[in-house]
Amino acid sequence: MFSVLRRRQERVRLIQKGTDFPMDDEPTGLIPALRAHSGVLLGIIGLAAWIALLWFMFGDVL
Image (cartoon, rainbow, N blue to C red; front, side):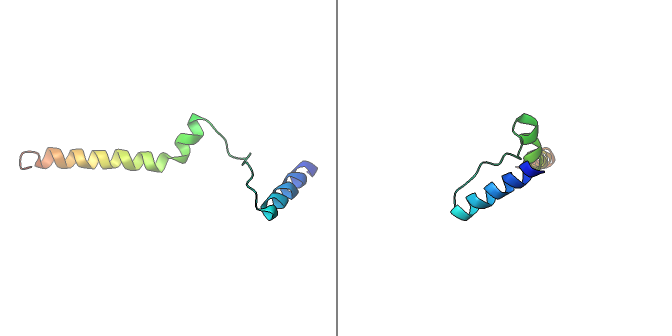
């Protein structure tokens, strides 16, 4: 409990000073990075599938 309050007070002091502080709460690694960018990856896969669909449907016309 006290360590949480101490950390929060330290962050408030750093914010008031205008300095940047490292985010200790954010996990690092491959799995958290994939989870954070899952929307972007899904969008890229969907766009590639849509382009492939158009290519297969209208490839002879293009």
